[in-house]
Length: 407
Image (cartoon, rainbow, N blue to C red):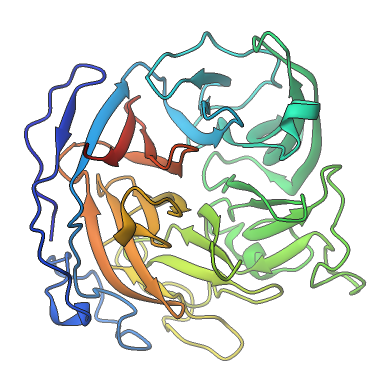
């Protein structure tokens, strides 16, 4: 069910509220109609019940939504600073700091030049857990090299006046480079040990797709490196001949979201499929997630992808998939107390679907789905939980939303 929402005023910091029933949710959400009613692109059958089009749920806790600003320029990633402010990247190559009341800083300079053509640009950002001591931040971006474009990971320190990044340095490059401007991946996460996890795309084209299955390539992978950009000891392929030691998982198309489950500590991701077949996966180190051999989507021409099958030995199944697509981008698990029924739910920013998907997850299976902010006409690029327990989301159109419990 789509949350009923009152009319939205488009001025910054305007607010509205949901208008939902206070009736308790049934335990068996699979008996409720799915939120998706359109015809799927393919006739593929799910591998198990509930892998797609799960029953719908509805948020019963009254909440309010505010547009804090609509002046951002193609924002891409959000990181939360220790004081609760938001550090936001803009695709064109700058960062800004935005307060929880919507005050937007001037551009933060000092970053390496980005290639902002196509799907490239300044991508994700993460704040060092020891930021108060070292002021270190990390970010991903698409970099031009003489050999072509690639996904790069860099670090630097935010100056005391917050006007520039000092000592910026690229610490990892996902090679080989390629003369294309699609499927960079680029999501960034810091794990509990302080290591960096980044996603890379397989660069979209038929010429590069097979590298998602090749262990001597960094394309179509999830990568784990230290803060110096070196392979993490304990990575699943350490010491294996002909395999890149920084690889954590492989067989990915274009991972756009990364998050740790707050209870289990498992790494989850959202992944762009082709025409149908967008996925949510629970990542296990060293495992193969199938692209471009298997998948639940079709080529944009309507032809089947890869081997034209959805299952194969040695290749993982998605926990959940959408057909037609959600176009998933950034994700976050909700851990706050403001809206109790959201606890440990996964929130997925949707691009051409123009909404945020709320997924209820129990025992590593999706048991309910809801569409939030579905009437905004916005491409949601990233979503994050703030220090205040509010949910924040950015859109390609330049908005920053804040979702909180209604007072």
